[in-house]
Length: 383
Ligand SMILES: Cc1ncc(COP(=O)(O)O)c(C=O)c1O
Image 1: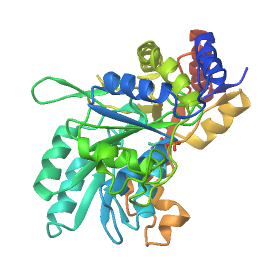
Image 2: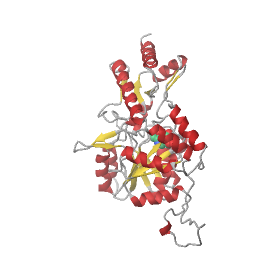
Image 3: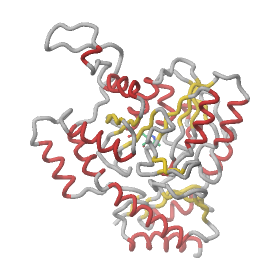
Image 4: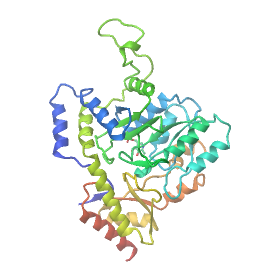
């Protein structure tokens, strides 16, 4: 049986939840969407949650709602999936990549600070940090900087439902709880913690942003009747701005909700898998993993840097172990090179890219399978 780097876990309850929707009156915009939103907001501890068709749509709605416009500079990390940056370009903004920290692989807050201090106030509009691999960003620190320079924050928490960082008062701050970032986003792609086929969620504590995003999710149609400008009758709806159809179906919401009810168990299993990798591979000379404050890590991925990474990747494939590389630095994608980004611009990210590998990490992986992965890696270096 091939061992992938990640995969969904579907139970009989998940299937039952989906089949119930298929037999019901509403395939989209039924009761499961608001139920899922409510349960998700409770899970992360935010006031509001808005379900959308995928994480990319979530990012797009956030940059729209925050008013990104032509030429607006927004900062993000190169070590992420391209969508974290692309959402800036969707609105005509300019993506400014800032290098990562060599221990955490997250955007390096000190480098961001340096960049902000080197330019006149107002040069940058916002920042999109990513809780990469499930490692939560210290948003308290980032918020202080954002406040000083008048920036907004969109937390890309696609990898981190259930993750948290500990603030300076010793309080746990859940990823996406809205205490430090204006908006946060999640993805329900099958390799993520919560699988809905496709799907996404936006969380916030800001009621105005919540209302605006709900309108933008549905073509810009005003969702609050009292805020309509006209009324032609009971059939009337009113499009007030240019929006999209970025809705989640009730089928997906039912699956997402069912998966969410097991999210804690899945997270615990991910932590066990990470601890076992740490224990059995941790001291080997060929490995260096994410380090620092690991406590609230949500372990979407288990990443380490390896000597001869490409050789190892190839070798593991011959043994039916399908590891992955997360990520090719986004600034080196041909699309971003056209704006002048090139090799050498972000050396920490590029050096990391040359060595990183994501090992299999998913709750249904058995201990036997994990031992096989570990032994095969060791076998490669000791052959
Ligand atoms: C960090 C990050 N941001 C955004 C996305 C986009 O999410 P989706 O695939 O649901 O559009 C992903 C998912 O692949 C991701 O990993």
